[in-house]
Length: 109
Image 1 (tube, rainbow, N blue to C red):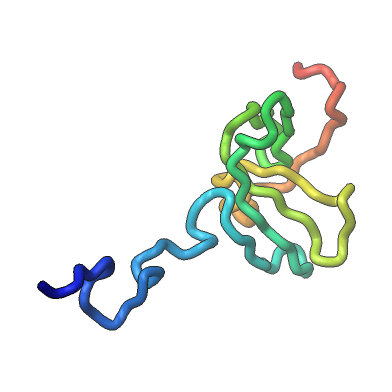
Image 2 (cartoon, rainbow, N blue to C red):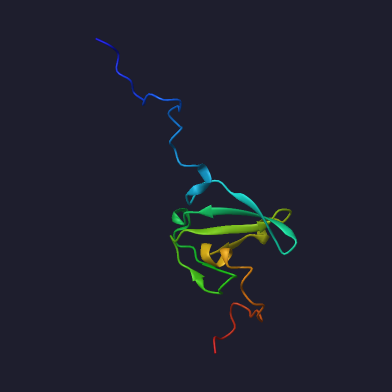
């Protein structure tokens, strides 16, 4: 009797069919250019931030706890420069118009 194979016959090893690391939330990150600066962008699942809320700078709306989103910061920035974005807002950041920024505690009228 021959031994049983645990992987399919072919050139790929056991990791050959695995999804790439950055393709899912919680995976790796990337570097993107925006506003003449290099930005580090990393997807986060939101599961580790239960109870925390963030405000997306793209739409100025709250990102609820547990919702997958992106964290972006300038390549040479510090921890205080990190911003949490909705994925769609980050992708549309170049198509948005410049608008007056208001403080977080300003009334919404």
